[in-house]
Image (cartoon, rainbow, N blue to C red; front, side, top):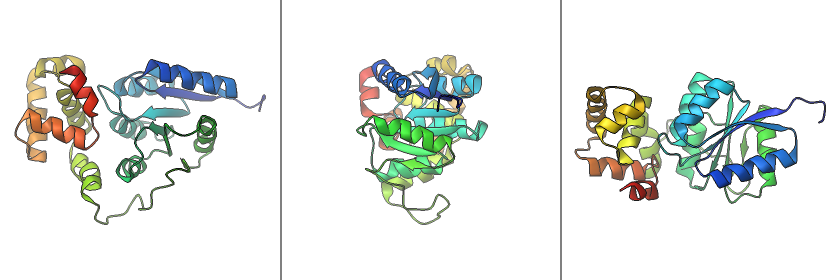
Amino acid sequence: MNDAPLITVLLAEDHEIVREGLRKLLEDEGGFDVVGEAATGRDAVTLTAKLRPAVVVMDIAMPLLNGLEATRQIRRAFPEIKVLVLSAHSDDAYIEQVAALGAAGYLIKQTSSHVLSKAILAVYGGAEFFCPAIGKPKPSRNSNSKSPAQRGALKNERNRLSSREVEVLQLIAEGMANKQVAAELDISVKTVEKHRQRVMEKLKIHDTAGLIRYAITTGIIENSVQLKIT
């Protein structure tokens, strides 16, 4: 493996101590080059475009832009880059959503550390890797079959929103006012208001509290994120 090129990796995780641990693990393992670290989903998208890593290790619960939406944007813009999701969530709704977005694998954070390098090697080589504790999601990625309520909320309602609308929704749910959202996304307040109105119309939600509840229910933000800000 000494003569083989290093596999370039971008770590997207909002907790610095976790990123440090992942970096050290991969450096000790050998064969990997951690070319960048992202603390927000938006940084993950930006750094992926700049650094073009072979594999992005992506947490789901990311501020400013959650890992699911960041994965969608990365896969759409750079289909050759593999995304390996690392999450605390192990329920089917998240796993199926990740698979539908084109992620190459899914690991839960309780997985033993040596599995990470194994998973990166697998997805880099063109395979899929879902940790043994959860297994690959059973429904086909192209399945049009009906889903349970939670899965439907993740796959159907969210898919009605554009990428920008999801970004606006997350920032509102994280406690930002329209002016703050506009500054964060570098758009006008009027444009934020239009996006907000479209989101409410599409989701049939009529107030900010409802948007926050929806964002928590569908995993766009975690309950702790909103509580910490407010």
